[in-house]
Length: 81
Ligand SMILES: [Zn+2]
Image (cartoon, rainbow, N blue to C red; front, side, top):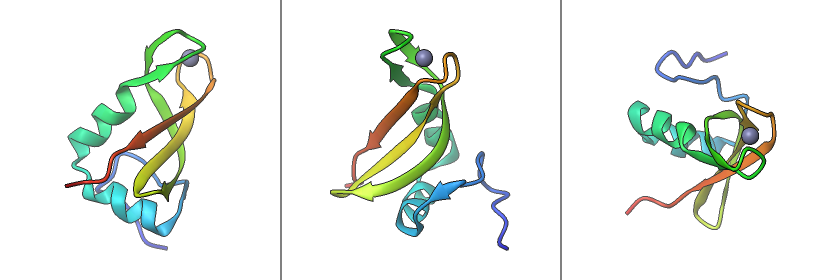
């Protein structure tokens, strides 16, 4: 088993391509992405507990739950230039 000590998360359910894309994102940007997700249930911005990710149409699709209410959240990250 390979360890990811350079990451803030443990990649629970990432596809290999999503994992590779995620690791290209600087740690600070990863934190910003996870700390600025809109929750329709809370009706405000929240932090996401990331649980899985995959690539779709060139976008990195992150799935997780709201840290406040546990509602399912999805956040897409645009392809890099
Ligand atoms: Zn919420």
